Image 1: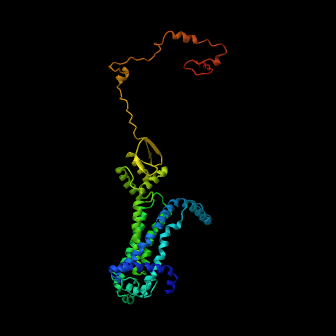
Image 2: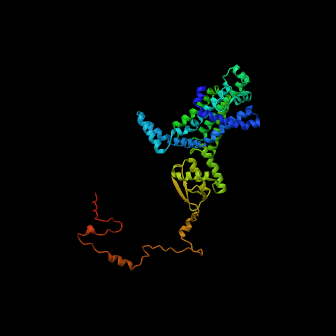
Image 3: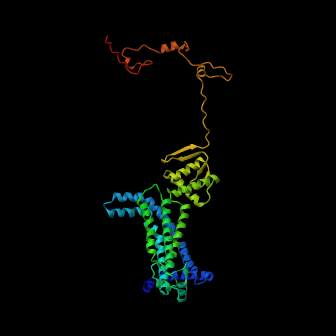
Length: 427
């Protein structure tokens, strides 16, 4: 233990120093030897670490969504080069490079948090074995050994023997009951966090192996926590349960305010945003403008929830602008159907009035004057043609010359060109 602790003193010393500083603050309030002082010191350590990891968490969200978008392309590459693993790996790396994604980015918070977890584990094990570690001297070691959380010492484990637990001033029953409850809560929080991600914040329009992998982890992680949790000291269980609760709350905030496109959470968010925009006629803050801007830029690539949101705004007389703002619609309104086709209509165009249908007697009598008398028909018939026009028409007809029948003008009702002779009658 001493050899391992000395090798990793570069991380165990800072962790022990942070715990001691928080213990000084809480010890002055609750007493230096109480479980509240040491337990809250561990909780505060978790909160401090997770605040420092927020940029990595944001990067993890972006990487996870980028990987979800790439799943169809990755599946095509796997099917195309299923017999050539080397070419398959090369094409995968090429795809990652072109899109600027990194599969390891989704694991960054866990990887960055692992050294602190490892350091805290060795600090608490040093307290259980009576060894000073880091900046924890003998007086602090004695104080930590006296600290109990609901009757269980910080350094006690579920698998410890009765003699070891009694040496820490507790009973084996208290230790196992407290550790069992904490292991169940730790596993349940991990399961709920993963289930919340799968049921609300995953694009349901794309069925990919990534979703199956996440679904499997939803059941594997809680089992792993339950198995390894019996070997964790009570202090480490406090640390891990606190970080699980933090992750669950952080993820709930992200799902509520910045959901994954195409997910159920996005449908609920756009419905809330639609109600607010139609009531107030504008977006509230920069985040909402960013989301509306992203939807407008997509154009024909919008999903079903985004098309419903844009069409709803147009029906309410509002128009989403490219900069993310929403204004009252004027002029043309563009709506998008489910198949991606767009339709342009005029918002202020008056409806065309259909003419009133007339009866048969009114149609036969002709149009009616303003005074109510029917107007006389003015159509020209053959009998109404002027007589002077007939000689002119007759004069215009000349006798066709012999041999010029092939180029003579066709009379009315006859086709142009030479006329075929009528076939003789069979009679």
